[in-house]
Length: 200
Picture 1 (cartoon, helix red, strand yellow):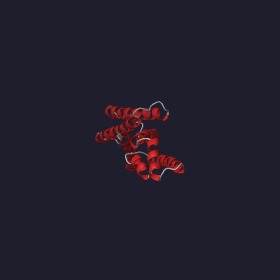
Picture 2 (cartoon, helix red, strand yellow; picture 1 turned 90 degrees about the vertical axis):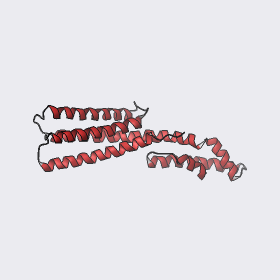
Picture 3 (cartoon, rainbow, N blue to C red; picture 1 turned 180 degrees about the horizontal axis):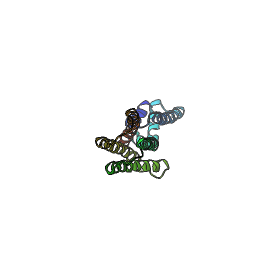
Picture 4 (tube, rainbow, N blue to C red; picture 1 turned 90 degrees about the horizontal axis):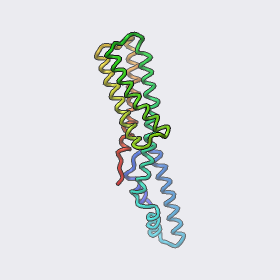
């Protein structure tokens, strides 16, 4: 049983707890199948071979499990996007001030808003069950793209000298944004890693 389960587990990538639960379920089923065959008179080796033939080739079973893991990771990353991105957007809007920021800053802010909206809408479609195909790839890619666009536009706004307000407030805002961006990047990178897993 160990060899069969190890062969199934080897190529898998995805949420650790779900991966362990699914492998445990397969292992329990395989063990029951072997015990049933031993009870019918087969040797342990014969029972294991027969059970493996019934369950199917490890790579085929692994491919089915990997699809479930990819879907689960896509949902996890989607939840990260729909919570972290609006929170960071609201935070910046609250502390950006009421004055006229100028055309350049306004355009840079709209670019960031567009990237945020694209990631948010995609994540919402995944969570509502309207997007399945390449969900992990889309969530991961758009999550990383949003962070890259936001950082680039923020750097440009800073270079224009448009940051106002108390230095301590801006420092706290930047620190909070960095934390939120790190969470998005980590989850997005995991989604892309899971999406790239191919089991032939």
